[in-house]
Image 1 (cartoon, rainbow, N blue to C red):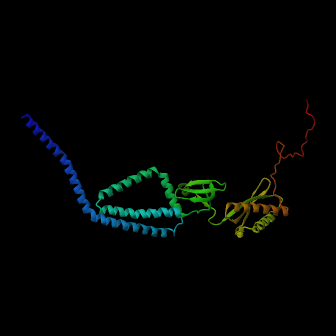
Image 2 (cartoon, rainbow, N blue to C red):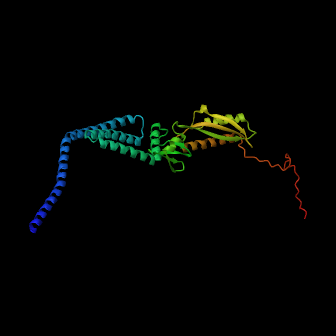
Image 3 (cartoon, one colour):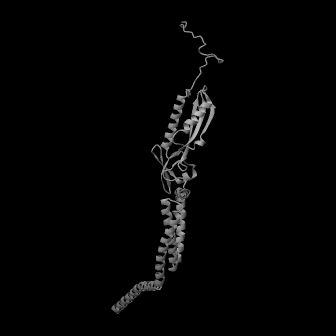
Length: 317
């Protein structure tokens, strides 16, 4: 009797274990069957999605080519051209992907993806404010084109030739041979002096002549000398003006225009003008005086050194 009872208990336990193991297997089988049914039912949508993906790939390429063709008419910035071409390409392709996800009935995935993109964009905006500001400034500068590569400019305290630009910084090579990297945000917010864009620059040269010289003669001689100087342009715009009674000279300024291909050319013309004026003055006995100082030994003033009696004897012991 005890053996029969033990056998029945063992058989019952085995049945319970078998039923417990059978339930998960049946659940997994049902899941696989439902997935297969869903996959088979989605095959037409997947075919449509594949066709749409190919169409949007072609459209993205086409839109990119059209945009680049139009962009080249308004700007020659290669970096900006590549950037905007890539942006247009991925905007069209991204639009296609969202439509494809809708065809595949993955609306929840689309919503989650958009929400994630918004959160990530907001976080990146706070984290990289300066980079974003320089980036946007670089885009504005590329469209405004206040200077080109090779132009001589002055931005803030830095003057030199523009070496290269990108969407983050503008690089200036100073006349001392150093490269200065200026963030585009600072470039956009600073006054920009472009010395190359007009191809001309005015030289303002200050000189002084003796009080004993004929001022009319000096003016006529300086104008003739500068006008005959090779490299001077817009001679009708030459300006001569006396500016002040100096300590030992009557001061004047002569202002004239020269071609400005580069900074060495400007300095060469300035040097030529100084030598030409000095040579003309020497030939016409016009004096550029040295500074003169008068020593007054009288308490009230007016007593010359030559009129004073000097005691050359020995001092009393």
